[in-house]
Length: 450
Image (cartoon, rainbow, N blue to C red):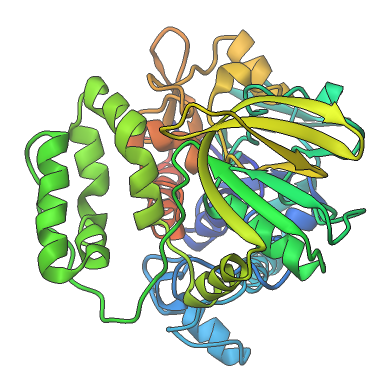
């Protein structure tokens, strides 16, 4: 579908980069909506609470532009902020994205508009869409959902309404998660992945001197990056079943190391996911996803060292277990949980509980007004695994009747059901680039199909 005006819902990394790429490709006029003024171009990921939150990828592979792989490094060096080997602060990366957006706005004042407001409704009109954000109504030919990750669901067995005020924190990124805590308190982090690591570092940086328990079903902890030259990726996807793939990776790990064995799958991961049937994808999510996540999405060495120091001092502990129940008590809550492979229920008193289970994608459980409206109107549907929005290979949204919508697209993490690997910058920038080229091409050829 062609159009003279593209509306982009969400001004985080995905939406901001799409707006920038449309300008770079001399594409259609664009309007970018973002509900949080402080997160324009940064989103949640790059507006982190403090400098201790580092990128999980070295700067050399963090260019936002696939056609200019050295773009971010040049910007870093020009500003005296690092080089290609640096794991820079996420705040720094957010500043990089904002600088790119500001440059695009300055260069194209009549073609790129930024709207400060949340889109709560998207209505069809003849030949286009109407987007509603408060008192603002914007007419567009095509809309692109770049809404990022949905917030985590409340963990089973926990009812925040029954707990003292301030005991449960649903938002792990809130800068006040250490507020009111004493050094003899215990904080329970529900989850043990990257979000829990961020929360632990945030608590430590805020001066909390008490103990932290990070608990998840398997208790797996993200691994650390190591020095070493990158190896070439595979050119063809491995064939065979999931067990065969696991054996193959283990064999390769014995020869070249586990990091290289995982990294060489990067170029073919989306192909592997695309070739897998629904049953294989479901088994991967059920059995292998936690192991994939901790080996694939790693910690910067400095972060890993800080986490190790917290563990060595006894202030941070990771545990594998299942939450049985939570009840209020004086000064906080009492959590009852069953260690993995154990029968005895353990009781832990906590002054604070922080939800670090990570982003979710189940549309049927969301209370986001725009997504609820799109669901209720049949304009979107969950993907088969309920980990995001159903889209086709061209990023067109699929509606409730199974039809692709030529006027509605989605990019970023909510398309993981189609692509799986679409949460990191190297993957999102490629998806983003491809969509921007299609939308811009439609403008160039006067509307001949995308």
